[in-house]
Image (cartoon, rainbow, N blue to C red):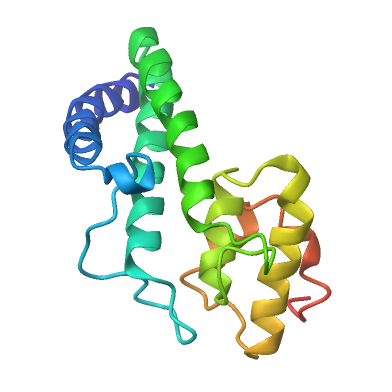
Length: 168
């Protein structure tokens, strides 16, 4: 336990620096969510998830992980500060990428799964986002590959749909 706590404390400092960099470079047009990046979704077969959408989600994931590390290492001030930032940026991400006309975050499975994984989607829209995710998988005849499967399995909003799309 001591070794894990030591690692968490070291990682808290490194992660905090990365998150602060991301936060300072957020796009004001996207509510402060990071939109620049180079790689996008490496595993997205088609249709492609827009690069800024993937980068923005990675920004949220970084803050989420920092909050977890700060909590585990007893940094209550960081938990409060970064969790408040996370909640604000989740709302901004949803506003930037949710399309009310299609009831989705886009045409790809990635676009719809990532917000579900981090609970970005407001609870009332979770069924629609889940439907969009399952629809993207079945329409494009893509099953999530083994690299992405842990994310799918941890996404409590999607895992119940595995029977529908043939994972069982």
